[in-house]
Structure formats: C-alpha cells, structure tokens
Amino acid sequence: MTSPAAGWSPPGIDTTVPSVARVYDAILGGRDNFEVDREAAQTFMWHIPQAKQVAWSNRAALIRGVQYMVRQAGIDQILDIGCGLPTKQNTHEAAQEINPATRVVYVDNDPMVLAHGRALLANNENTTVVTADLRDPQAILDDPVVHEYLDFDRPVGVMLIGMIMLISDDEGPDDIIATLMEPLAPGSHLFITDWPDTGDPAQHALSRACLETLGNGWARPLDEVRSRFQGMEMVPPGLDYIARWFPEDPEKPVAEFEDLESHERTMMAGIAVKR
Image (cartoon, rainbow, N blue to C red; front, side, top):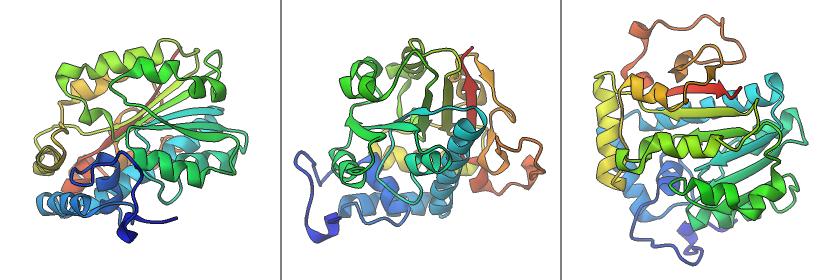
C-alpha cells in the first residue's frame, strides 16, 4: 500500500487541511497521513502528552466492544461509522476472528479511508467501506451498499467510536443517533466511546486540542454522554471509563476512579441494547 509520505493521495483530498481519520492515524504512529495531520497530532501531544495512550485506549475499547457484541450477544452485522484508517486489528478482524461470517460495513467521510479500505478489503467478501457522513444519518441508512451487506430486519451493531464528540450541539447528536437506531431490529446494539466533562484538566486539554486543530470536539457533562444511549438498556458494566470497562467480564476487578491517571479519565465506553 502506498503511503502519503511517498507522494500519493486519492483524488478529492485537500492535503492542507487535517482530517479526523488522518490525525488519529498520525497519533497512533501510522503512515497514512500528511504533514498537516502530523502537525495536528503534535498539537494534541502538546496539550495532552498522553494523547497516544488515549488513542490506543480507544482502540482497545473498540476491540473489547466488538468481541462482546459478536461472541456474547451474537451480533453478526456491524455498521462502523467514522471508522478511520486501517490500523492494528480493525473491526472486521476482531469480529471475523470470532465469527468469519460477520458482515461489516465501514463508513467514513474521508476519501483516503475509502481508497485504503477498498485495497485492504479486496478479498474479504463480508466487509466493505462506503463514503458518507455521520451528520447525514439518513443517507447512511439509505445507501444501497449498506442494504446489500446488512439486513435491518435482524439485529445490527452500530459503532460510533470516538465520533459523537465531533458533532456540535447545533447538529443534534441525539437526533442523529435516534435516526440511526429507529429502523433497526430489536436486539440491535449501540456502541459508543465519548469524552466526558467531569472537570478533569486532561478532558479539557483533549477538547482544546481537537477544537484548535479540527474545529470540533467537545467534552460534555456525564448526563449528556448518557443521553446518547437513548434510554436503552445498558450492557454491564454500563457507561464507564475505558480502563474500567470490560463488557465480557463486568465483574473483573478494576481500578477505583480515584486511582485512574488523569488521561485515563478522558474517554468512556458503553453499549446499549434496543429492545
């Protein structure tokens, strides 16, 4: 796979403006990013030196959540919105390692994700990638490729990993999620990671870095983070900090909140079930 560092980029990419997917890739140490994205990643690390640990923690939550949905809940259809660029153990890899028949549709608004995703998935008949934007959830639901891969009459796992904090209040994050979940069958799961605002300095530093580089990214009060789950039944251990969140082993001994490092309080994860 050719990297941007070698001078290649898909058509339609403005290499002077950072993108969420490419900045995240840069923070994780990936190669599919441009100088502007690497500069943004440095800004993140200036505001919060543990930005790389935060990003990998979010990735660890993704894998744990997928493993729970596929192995424990029997989900075999996943809609991963805002998937970003391929990195170590992607959603389809975590899912299909457990059930090879799991169908995964990746959605992202960055053309580079589409280009690299198609290359990565060329020989995987159960996984595809489409270009769409979370801010237009109906377009995602209406996409013919989504319907080709996913049967909305059966449970679907919807993933919004590190995404909903990028949606402004004016854009209606709860309305977007409600639109996504409304047509899905009972038994569908909603899996979110998000930024809480409990007053911790690292939470505010992460939000400042995102606003400074990307123009969006808001840590929000816990009640707002909980509202994203639309009042649906939460899977144990409920909404919790990622360092304490193990849905396949909710009784696992975990660190007390007071013992978490500041950067470990920047992201929370949760899964809810539509009944």
